[in-house]
Length: 178
Image 1 (tube, rainbow, N blue to C red):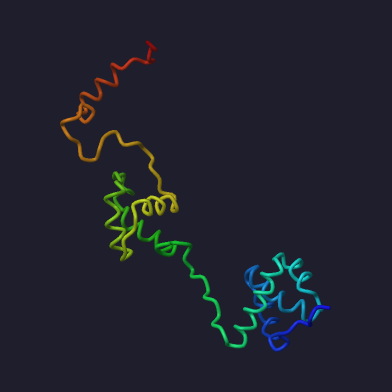
Image 2: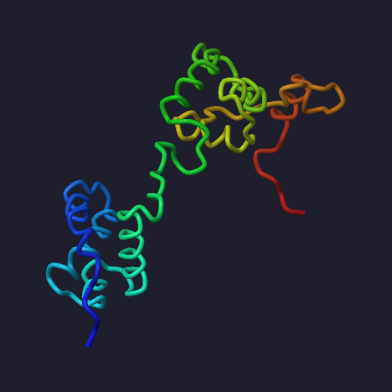
């Protein structure tokens, strides 16, 4: 015979959580406390109803009672930021609008040159890949391929516009396998 469920002193807090639950995890937490106490469900039945293992259900009940009694602090709420985000979406969009003002007039945007400006606005350093992800998140993408390196040199024949044009005009339409 299983022992009776404990935690009747926290039943009112569980009902309050059940009414104000905004996520599935909060709903499951409230149900893990209410179902055994009011409907006399076993731990196995409660776990089956809420879709968790018996051990996870037992841990949820124990944690809820510790938090409700004040023996343990409540778990921190997730911030409004996404995982590993540098700023909120709206702030990211505002920063990109400020930094990319030259792109609105048809200017060329070189991402490595944007990075210091974005870091200054954010107040922290970010990786170059983070800048690319931020641009992609906000629908900014590369529309035309670069034809040459941003800092042209005279050493390479492709860097000379005249030589590049001659090569493009004189290159065979199809390559013949030798």
